[in-house]
Picture (tube, rainbow, N blue to C red):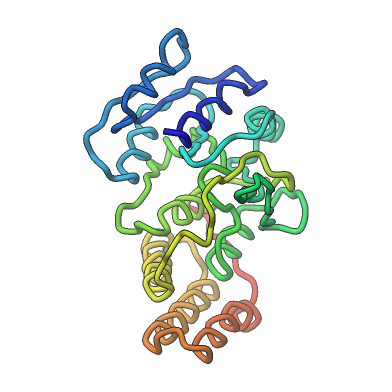
Length: 275
C-alpha cells in the first residue's frame, strides 16, 4: 500500500482545492476507505474487474466538472501540480489537453526528467496530431495530462481495450483530433516512483500495437484528412510492419527511425477538411 498511500497524501496536500476525487477501488485493503472518511470531496467506486482500461472508462462515465485529471497509484503530484494544470485550462479556453514532462524518482529519490517538447508551448491540434502519429507520444504518461471534459463528452471518447500498451497515447491523439489546442508546460507536475527500466515491454509487440493504433486512427479520422496525410501515415505503417517482420534488428530499427522524417518530408503539409 506504500505507493497508494504516498499518492493519496500528495493529492490531499494540493494547494488547489476545487476538485472532487473519484477513486476506483479494487483491493486496497481499507486504505482507500480510511482515506475517504471525513473527506466529503472523495467518492469511492468499488469494482471487481482487474482491467485498468475498464477502470479508466468508469472514471470517464462518472466524472463531473469541467476537467478530468488522472493520477496513477505509483505516481505523486508535486505541490501545486493541480493548480498548474487547472490554471492552464482556466486561462486558455481554446486548450483542451495539457501535459508536462515526466519526472522519475530513483532509489535515492532523485528525479530524472524527460522533456517531450523543448519548451513550454501552445500547439495547434493539427500539428500535435501529426507529430503524434508520425513521431510518437508528445503527452507522456496519463498522470502528466489533464483533459477538458466537454470534448470527451461531445465525441464520446473512451480508452480502447484493443490497445493494452498504447491506450493512453491513442486517447490523447483523439483529443488532438477533436479538440483545439494542446498546451505543454516545461516543468514536471508529478513524479513516477517506478523505475522505467523495470517495465519490460517486448519491442516487437509494442510496434505491432503502434501499427494497430495508426490503423484505428485512420479508420476513425480518414473522412476529414487530406490525401497527403493519409499517404504519409500509410507509408509509416508499411515501414513499421516491415521492421516488425524483421524482428527489429539493427537495420530494421534504423529504417523505422528514418521513416518519420521521410514521410513528413515527402508528403509535406496537410489540413483537416471542414465537417
